[in-house]
Length: 388
Image (cartoon, rainbow, N blue to C red; front, side, top):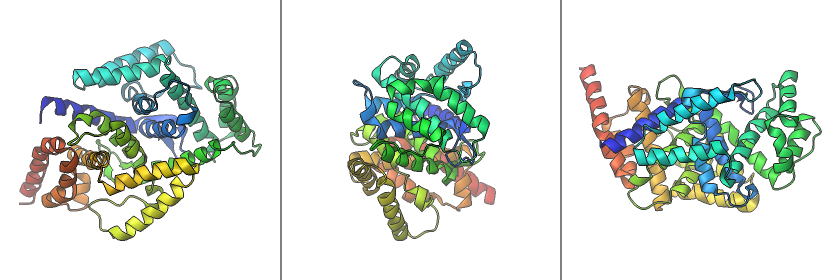
């Protein structure tokens, strides 16, 4: 493994810790607190879906990358709920130090480029940063407005945030959203105008992906990963590993593809690559799920995202081939970090790893597979020695 690739893997493994940073707001079903990784995925999806509401001059692809990166500093600095008193100067200092450390894990040129995106968000002056910051105050608001277990105290906090707090700015910058949020809070039962209504339904439905569990665990082995935070992580993998694509790929399209690639699992569930299931039946279930989920959006937008998902599934274009490769690499990293958790559970052989995973990675990102093979061989050799 080259030093450059090793640094890139180190950054991505460190980023995995964001899945263990809990936020103040809950999932839309009220079942648990949202973590910062799945928030970052959802925010990137908001940036993609709400693109035509962005201020003039905003770069939507850069906004999506900004959403993926904006809270990475919380690995060190933690989350700071906006409704509680905070020492903002101290938080800014902690986050700046965290940014230096975390982006400093990458090769210098790449670390500086990603740090610049994060810093642009923090400064909040460009049209792109203004757009992402507006979404960042909106997404948590709707998470809490949907919470079926919200107490009177919770609703009082929301009311304060909307009337005099950070979200009060939405009254001028996004009046349709502000009006609908206020109506929900006061139980006035009024619908959002179209196409906002359809987009909010789609984004609310997408929240369920955070409750779809995968076979793979977090890199620390503490729990199973969910498909929402997985989608965030592999989008970050694509951003970092773009230079290793075998054929030229449009990385912004790849990232968009990876943000939505597992939405069908809301209905179909996760079917582990090493599990025992009928691929044809799974395909039928996923096609029905795609019809329903992308059908929630305004017609033209739904068709566009559905076509992007179909392209990923077909894995014939350069973008889709690279996206599929990245989707296979991330679980390998998690298994190597945790002593082969899901490999042991599913009794995976070295030959199966090569045929089910390696072959797909080699199609799109051979340098990454070559970088991992020695570690994979060592793991299987250790397993063989242990059994003897």
